[in-house]
Image 1 (cartoon, rainbow, N blue to C red):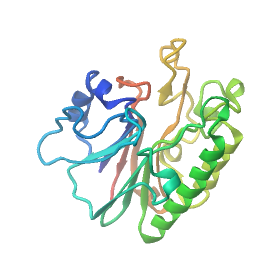
Image 2: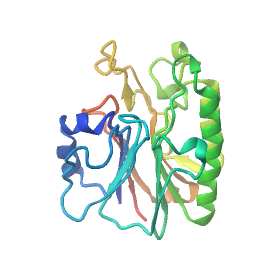
Image 3: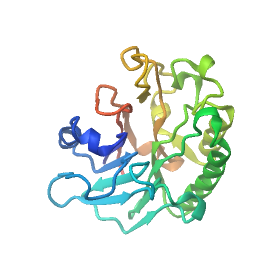
Length: 252
């Protein structure tokens, strides 16, 4: 089973930069997108026959948003986490299957001067509770742009970025808490000490050319799926966004 997650930073823009070619080349079982910045039908997304599309768009036009494309019919679909304060920005889609839940997430950014850090902390606590409730029923595959570099090796310049959005002590601690609650970071499971592999680069200062990046896009799975992890990759060669796709192969 092949899964791909990608913050496309505007799917309409990414469609003009080769998204469909990438999709047809990979042919994933599940393609989870973040920051779609559109509603279904605003662009022609020709994925081929028998493809199912699930969209959760923000109420604010051209902002945030998630989508999942798959040929596999789910048992159920849920948009958001059922909390009024979190469910207006199109940040969460959950698909239920016989053997697992798939959760596509676009985590709120804490923003400049950490204006949204307090809200981010509420989101993290509520989402962790949500994932743990799902995990009581069946294993969880949780993916997306989670807007945090967990460890110092997850970004190029940890010392100068400490306490910037995405690398605050508080955000990192929430990721530690999640992973200690029965979940596994699949990339670090396979490559615990690998450095220099990132999934996001600023558009400024030729950051991608210099590989001055951050690893903030993840596949996280329930611990009991560890033995099912066959491959976890960050597809750094794929362009089309300021993020690159991340890939997970599971045998379940």
